[in-house]
Length: 118
Image 1 (cartoon, one colour):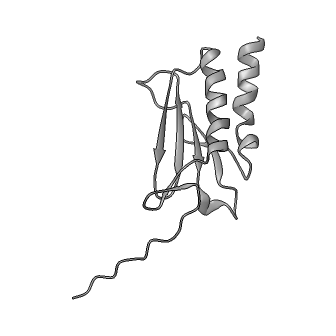
Image 2 (cartoon, helix red, strand yellow; image 1 turned 30 degrees about the vertical axis):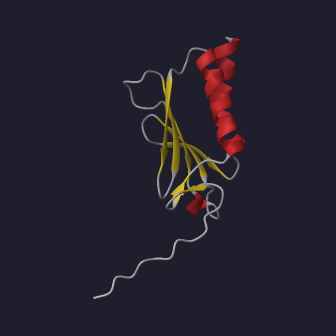
C-alpha cells in the first residue's frame, strides 16, 4: 500500500513551519504596543500567543488565572469574506471583525482612553 504525502507548499511570511499561521512583525508590533499601554494603565497583567493551522491568537488577561478578557484572532481563510481579523470578548462573542487590524483594535483603544482619561 502506498501513502499519499502532501507536498509542503511555500507559505507566506505569516506561516510558521508546517502550515501554522503566525503574526507578521508589524502586526505583532501593533498588538504588543496596545498590550504595553494596557499594562501601563493597570488593566492587563498577562498574555498568551497560540499559533495553529487555522488561526493565530493573541489572548490578553487581567490575571493569569482567568479567561482572556480579549482575544485578537487572525484567520487568513476569512480574508475574502468578513476579514481575517477578529476581536473576541471574554464570553466568546465576536465584538469586531474586519480587514484592517487597527480598525479591529479600535474598541480596545477607546477603552484605554477611558481608563487613562477618567
